[in-house]
Image (cartoon, rainbow, N blue to C red; front, side, top):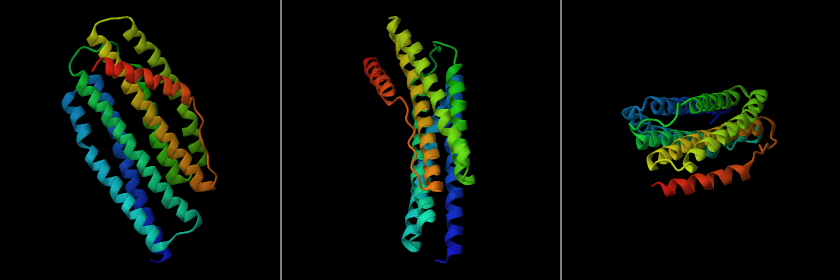
Length: 240
């Protein structure tokens, strides 16, 4: 394989990864929209796209492995191929989180929503922007945009913290089991959106490493997140 054909194949792989990213971004939008509208058929359609995303991931990873085996790229070219391989994993997991939200839509079903959905759609828009910008900074090798994506994670964490306090507060009020169960399900939606933001941050960090060769680790309040996760999972099991 010549250098020219190598870069041509690399461009094709990148294009497929961006296509995959657009699909999971659409899944995020649809999952939260169908939660707001309580459209169960729509939520199922989000789940139906999961196999497509999985197959795209497998195809991209296979092409990356083949490219490494045939060309044995060095330095920046190798970092680019490895970055695509890892970014594709993050994109697939973003799709999984969107599907998790769609599953929660089906769980809530048509029961009346316990609160107006204001914060969750805003949170979803912010996470979608992070996903889109993380892939844009990859295409454009834009370090400033990558840094902006990393910085955007903290406000998402703060929104999750506020929703956690509000929704756990509803559970602790001792209202009906149905109300408490839905509060936990809505909290899980926020948790999955927070996870999506984390994956977008991972992508931005991988771009920075790809371009500079220097590793960047975004430090967030992992202990606080872990504590909230424990509470959410405990309450989820309680209402299963």
